[in-house]
Length: 436
Image: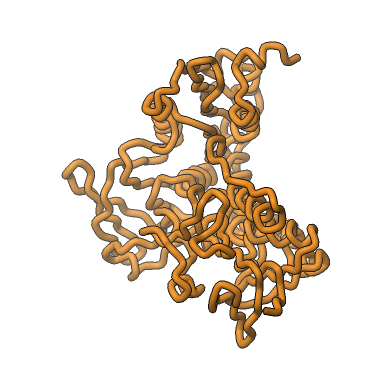
């Protein structure tokens, strides 16, 4: 069979771009298919705009707290249109790095349209059918919109349209207390909106160490952000300019009244209408593509990476999995994904970062030695900078090796890398004692 390409990549987000550029640089003939904007969720509706927006919110909060450092200042106005103009200008500044033109200069054929898999060696784009040795699915994920009574009768925001908002909410109701909901909820509170966060979990930061949620609930309460945990959303109703959200907490019914809603109740993998069912691609109950640690699907020459497969829906995870895909297609020496040292950060203020094993998991696997917790108020630099609302927690194995770490603090997302290196290289705490 004559092949048009060595690899066809479906999806131009973080994972797809890494596969396309990496494989092309190694001499492979690569086509990249994207039906929407290049750069995927991270550039257009996720990491880049959210962090740009949070910079504004955290700046506002710094101004409000400046008097304790001897600086008297005040916020006269937050112009939401100017805020979003800056957010979108940041996107446009970065866009050339992910552009069609840049990837074509690398030797990648970039095709606009929906890629539909016809069989294990064929992908249809528009009226063209392309032949390929390998297919990589990197179609990402989209906001999960639940079947809540009344939700479809109102206008609501998700991460896909919140950065086009042109009026600052008076009272933003956030459905979901995951990273998106917590980050944006806090950000809107910092620019002056009243915020209520509704979550079904009993604790905040339910995927982190329990100490995190205990600390952060106090942080949010001190910012006058209302957090309603262990809540079941019953119904949503429009009442003139108001939006009413009816919830149930511990058997008691309440109503939360606001003027705007942000839906952040998780993500759905984008596996519909790409030909997955037609070719017999195995999916899990959520619709994610099932792969092995080589990122192979049940069809030997079809791979998947990023949000569409999981198990972690992070940009850096998509890039990591993409590197595994490249090695396994191009190199005779096969590579497997290792999820034992995956870091993640929620960019609230303070930041919350984690890598490796939690204490509970270490005990369940019988590898737990002990844990060490150091409050930030014991570190002189943290005291000097006023960054005392947080801690470092290390999970150690029976022989002193670092198994996991949690950091809560202003620079947690940067510091966590040291712990990630320690876990990957099986380092012990004593190994750091000799580092100058």
